[in-house]
Amino acid sequence: MKELKITALTENLPQVLAFVDEQLEAADCPMKVQMQIEIAVEEIFVNIAHYAYEDEDGIAAIRVDVQGQPPSADITFIDSGVPYDPLAKTDPDVTLSAEERQIGGLGIFLVKKSMDDVIYEYSDGQNILTLKKGW
Amino acid sequence: MEIRKVNNAGKMTVSISGRVDTTTAPALETELKESFNECEALVIDFTDVEYISSAGLRVLLSAQKVMGKKGGMTLINVSDDIMEIFEVTGFTDILTIE
Image 1 (cartoon, helix red, strand yellow):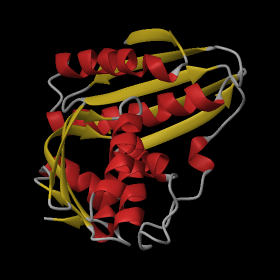
Image 2 (spheres, rainbow over the protein chains, first blue to last red):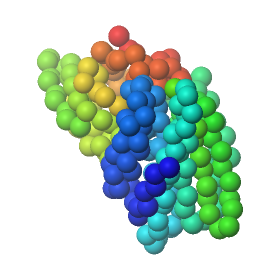
Image 3 (cartoon, rainbow over the protein chains, first blue to last red):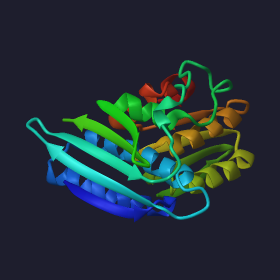
Image 4 (cartoon, chains in turn green, yellow):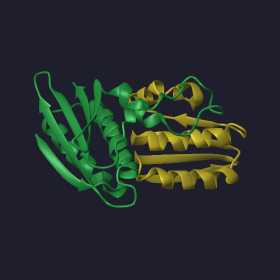
């Protein structure tokens, strides 16, 4: 298991993605799965950067753990910001026309659709969100 | 991410290369907004797009809302992996993809 601790700011996104990519490449993750995981990681990290700590800077920990054969990655995000379950959001209606569609709300929906499992818990003052994806 | 724009008699082709994510999507949005006034129809070339996240999808949806009332917006050369993202999000029904 590898861990990155980083200030939860949008401008740190490239570092977060580079860290996750490094672990996935070491585990021979196919490009397509890697892109799906990157999209999910971006959504979750940007969410934390926007909402977890309000006006002050806080830390997000990102853990990547690849296990098994065929391999499966667990990517866990931990922050000690305000309790926030992104999975509680209602899914957008993806059948609406462009005129009727709302801008936004797509990110978490994409995460739910593209990952094998997404688990959220609030424990000991921490938001803990885990993405699971195998290949 | 890099953007190239070619305007041919009111039909603007915007070629994007690289990654359209949270950090680069605002630059794409600015470029597209400028293009709205300079063209009737918009073509977005996805040949060299490696990655698009929901931040990029939001920009495409906003652009579609504007260009849908004008001469339209067409996406060309979309890779299979990116097409799958458009399918999951219902964007294949909203956008014109050739």
